[in-house]
Length: 186
Image 1 (spheres, rainbow, N blue to C red):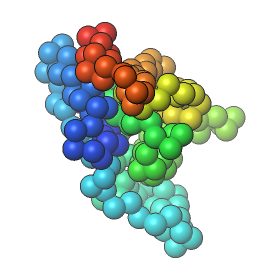
Image 2: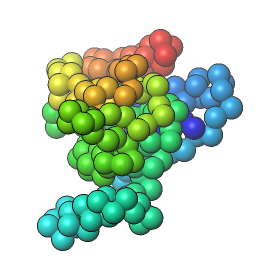
Image 3: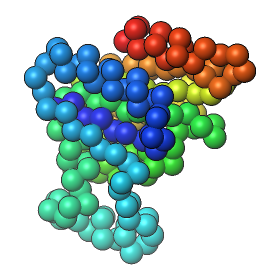
């Protein structure tokens, strides 16, 4: 299964446009099912003490039957993961951070070794991080770097690739040329 984690909210999202072309290319190589998780449609539970106590109790009992755990189960089962996340306000959308918090489930997406290091329980062997930015200042550690570190160290996905188009809102930029150039190089 190819999992598309869609953190785009604009109707004509340039990030989503690039991600869709990537998905199209990937689907030509394989007959895998494509599943999209549109983050704006998810009502994440409030992470308060009551919620954490419930979640920790479920994890301690190994009871993952609550629908809450479905996001983590889907992430763990995916063979390929595509994250579409525009870069704005010096990072990725907050919904992506919430998603990460809720898929990071001990016993579903990772476990700890006896030495205390995370060990992956995920199937994916490739993660694509698709992003766009209006400007050209896109420090890796504010977006892709965070996701890549988690992917490699918790989820065992060593092959991570960033696909980006930047400078889209710079005065005089040829947006179509930049976006199409990015798509061409996928």
